[in-house]
Length: 266
Length: 88
Ligand SMILES: Nc1ncnc2c1ncn2[C@@H]1O[C@H](COP(=O)(O)OP(=O)(O)OP(=O)(O)O)[C@@H](O)[C@H]1O
Ligand SMILES: [Mg+2]
Image (cartoon, rainbow over all chains, first blue to last red; front, side, top):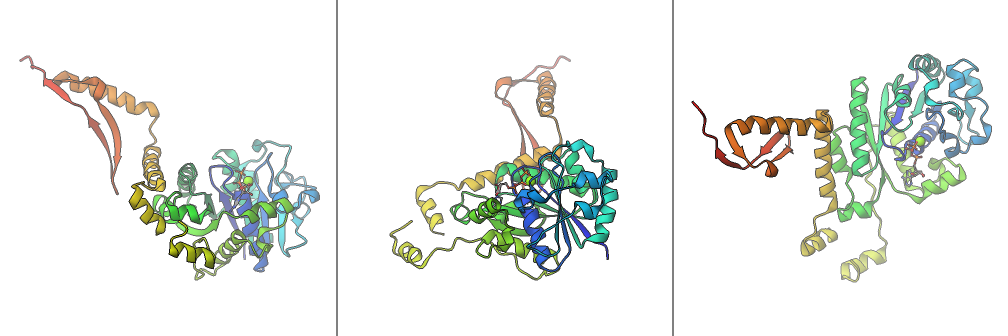
C-alpha cells in the first residue's frame, strides 16, 4: 500500500509546526509505522535540531529532489525511535530551488518507502508553502488561541480547500487557566470561527522547551502533557478514531481546591 | 465558574469575547477579498449619488460591514439634512 503524505502548516510563523511534525512523526513511528518527517523550510531548517539529529546531516531534501543523491542516502535514521527517519532541509539554498514538479517526483518515491510522510511547511503562503502541499493528501493546520494565528489559519484553510485538501486543526499552546478566566479563546471558540474538523488540543508545556533544549523527542517524555496530547493525535490519525480528544485542564491540588472552596483564594 | 462569578461582580467582559468578535469580523473582510481602498471609493461614490437628491452631512457618515450569524451586510449610515428641491 502507498504511504500517506500529510502537510503540517499554519500560515503564521512560530505556532508549533516543527514541534508538531517532530512529535506526531515520532509518535506514529512508536505506533509501528515507517515514518519520514521532511523539513520543507528551505534555508531555515529546524526539524533537525528539534529531533536532535543535526550532527548527522549529509544530504538534504534539495539533493533528493534534484537527484544529487538517493532517498536512502538523505534519510537519517533515528537511533532512539525505530522506523523514524528525518530528511532535513538545505540550509544554504533559498526557497526557490525547489519546483512543485520536482517535489511531486520525489513524493512518488517517498510514498513507496514510508507509511506516513509528514511535511513540515515553512510559515507563509508563498512558494515554500506551495511545495509543501503539492503532493499532500491530508493537512494539519496548527494554530494558537489568538486572533492573528486563527485568522492566518483561516486563510490557509481556504487555500487548502482550493486544492481539494480537507484540513484538520490542532490548537496548540492552550493555557487552561486563561481559558477559564475568559482571557483566552477556548477551542470551542476557535472551532466555531474556523468550522473544520479538530485533530487535537495541545497545552502550553514547559517540557516542550526542555525537550527541544535536549534534542529529545517530546513524545518520549512521559511527564509531558503536550507530548501525551501529540501521542493521542497520532493514534487518532493512525485509525483510532474512537479515542476522544482531551481538553487540557488545569489540575489544582487538594489544598488549592479546598482553600478555593473556603474562599481563601480567588 | 469562580471567575464567572467574579466577573459578574466586577462587570468586566471576558477579553476572549472581544477577540472572537474581532476575528469573525476580520474573516468576513478577508473573504470579501476587497482592497482596503474599495470601501472608501464606494463610500465616495455613494456620497456623490445621494448628494444629487439630498443634502447630507458628509463628515458624520459611516460605512461598515455588519455580521450576523449567517449573513454579512454593508450598512451605510448618514443623517439627511434636507431634501434637495428637484428642478422639474
Ligand atoms: N505546546 C507548547 N508549549 C510550549 N512551547 C511550545 C509549544 N509548542 C511550541 N512551543 C515553542 O514555540 C516555539 C515555536 O515552535 P515551532 O518552532 O515548532 O514553531 P513553527 O511553527 O515551526 O515556527 P516557524 O514558523 O518559525 O517554522 C518553539 O520555541 C517551541 O519550543
Ligand atoms: Mg518550523
